[in-house]
Image (tube, rainbow, N blue to C red):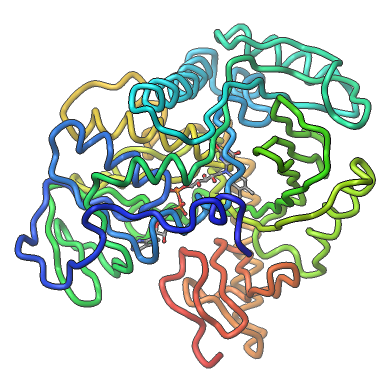
Amino acid sequence: MESLWRKQTPKLISKSSTDHSVPENTHRDIIVIGAGMAGLLIAYYLKEKGKNVLVLEADEIASGQTERTTAKITSQHDLKYREMIETMGTKKARLYAQANEAAIREYERLIQSQGIECQFKKVPAYLYTMQDEKVLRDEAEAARSLGIDAFFTKETELPFEVTGAVCFRNQAQFSPLEFLKHISQELEIWERTKVIEIKGNQVITNDMVMTADKIVVATHYPLRNVPGFYFLRQHQERSYVLALSGCNNIEGMYIGIDKNGLSFRQAGEYLLFGGSSHRTGENKNGGAYSYLAEMSKRYYPDSKEEMRWSAQDCMPHDGIPFIGKYSILTPNLYVATGFQKWGMTSSMVAAMILRDELCGAENPYSELFRPQRINLRAGIGKFLADVVESVKGLTKGLFHKNGPRCPHMGCELVWNPDEESWDCPCHGSRFEKDGKLVDNPSKRCIENK
Ligand SMILES: Cc1cc2nc3c(=O)[nH]c(=O)nc-3n(C[C@H](O)[C@H](O)[C@H](O)COP(=O)(O)OP(=O)(O)OC[C@H]3O[C@@H](n4cnc5c(N)ncnc54)[C@H](O)[C@@H]3O)c2cc1C
């Protein structure tokens, strides 16, 4: 289902996205795989540094999760900082806060200096609860101790009473595709060019082999299982969005921390009203959209649903994206993934880190986001929970051979009635009713469908 952003910006065209069937030069300094928010920002900053960069995109520019985001640009990544301080220490938590605050400022600088018209607006971001307020009082204090301009409040613009909220000042929102339309213009991007394999410095598609000094995998879910083992280190979660008309305009961006919490942000005349999150592959009874429709009628009785869509993102066990070298065995291969539904700032953080790493400069945030880090205390519980889910899915795939199985690793697929898709509960691949691949990590369609 088409998102508001795609409706507003139907086609993003780059200068060289057209004819590339017989490339004269098959070598580039850097090849970036994937033209979503991450891949495009990474390519943009590397090109700015004088690198000869090519972006390869399997489908169209920004046709992945990026066109279905709600595009809040914020360092407020759900309940984060109190827990991070407790499990990883103040130093890492402060670096995480600083990296994401720096990403907001960089968006602002870039958009203003380039005069990019993309509905960029500085707004506050809020977490809210209708339960015990203490957790948000603690979060406000933790965020403040790390240098974020945060405070606890009971005042919000929401159409219901909250027991408490934490506000981060100086956050932002924008229209992601209007922004990317500008960013992509001067980049060399080849659409409908799916990478099927990477071998050393070779990037292999169905009809050609390109080479590069460095390769960046920005395909949302990394396209190689081994090395890297990202399939063991993150799972995917799906969430749903309605665009409503006829609601009172709100200034801030909101997200609820309680079970079934809702997300709110204004986008022009529409209110983006989101929620119904679940692990991909765990929505066999459906009801994600109808829950949102019911809540929208409860809180905004005069509203009208104008659009609906959903998306998913990769959730790393320790709550930090993976940005840097793909593995210790692949010195020229890099990755940016694990954005945990906060891919606007995370993509910018990835672009800043990889620009520096690939140009031989130091970056203060590299170590925190390094994919080979180990944060045992923060990640072990979620790692074990994920292993259990994967084993369950694989076992069902082995014994229930009648249902469709995921080509990625053989897990049993689960029908998602809300999206009419076959979804994999292990790693989050998705397929249309007829078996056509929608979301990776699977590289193939379901056979015999
Ligand atoms: C409902 C929802 C709301 C969200 N709201 C927010 C928000 O408010 N703020 C925020 O910060 N984040 C938000 N996010 C997260 C954010 O949208 C994502 O993290 C971000 O869009 C991911 O960008 P990406 O470039 O990594 O992936 P994508 O946009 O998916 O881009 C990856 C690209 O790689 C291409 N590709 C894949 N495989 C290959 C291949 N083999 N060869 C070539 N190309 C390939 C795909 O076609 C795709 O275009 C939200 C997520 C969800 C689920």
